[in-house]
Figure 1 (tube, rainbow, N blue to C red):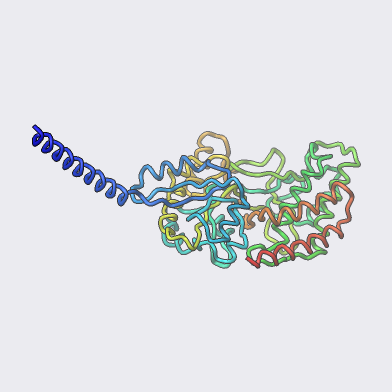
Figure 2 (cartoon, rainbow, N blue to C red):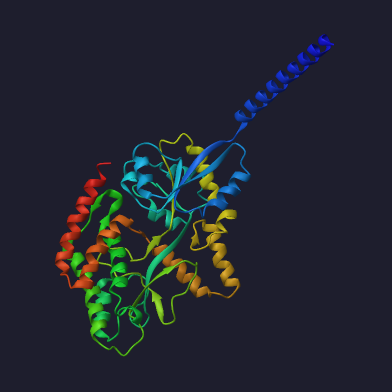
Length: 394
């Protein structure tokens, strides 16, 4: 009996060892076959999650893992310390990090795998974002910041400060929409946005800031606002209306044309590309090719057709949107042609938030507390030089 029990115990022990061995072997195999994680860093935004899930569902070799940061400062600190994700989806910014080659240059990959394919990025957008032949970030969607001007005073896109001044002096009309009459913060915000574009070459880490030109530019907006505040102008039509275009082919308001913001002599027309977020890949990543594969997936027609809250960066999908709106009679052929011209003539890229904030803080004081234009210009010049010097230290 004892012998039988011992034999049974031995058999059970042997089976247990075999089972455990099998489980261990199977677990080891599973670990070896488990897809590699490629990390995507975002800041307080998981809107890309459905796209990540769609990609992961059809990808067996690796998976995209989303890393959501609550603090932008923490993310930047980790990045500068060498603790980074493989790729990021962040606000577009030709930053010091890009200038110091922390990011992968996309241009060779774009030339090789996107040009003249169904994943091609809108050429005008690509050209505007390319600096000295390098492309550090690619947006998921975009919009165009521009101005509408009264058609009876302006012929079309691309007006000079002289043109705008002439119209302002010759005709008793408010320069801004009537609801902006007492909202200095609205005016200062718009002027700051375009000033950050026109007067700073951020990509080269240089200040192209001519105080006299800036003072002339700011004085135009200040004079228009003061006149609008102090006079009861018998008109509800603004001379200029700042606006964003987020739908392709969107026509200007009745009686208006897209003019862009007034610009100084020898400057391109004053409309600019703007986007919420853009992809970048860290040059130190060991998964550059895999990260690029995910970006290509995001630029595919299938994914770009789901873009909302802006226009798709995929050129074919953008044209599809225009064709759909024409077919549904939402826009006319003339509207589509006007949009194509605006797209073709848009050359600027929105200034970085850091640059815009410098202009905004100093310009707001001019509108709100009667600060002198000359004083604001001097402060902006000093702060820009200091900011760019500190950026070079990274």
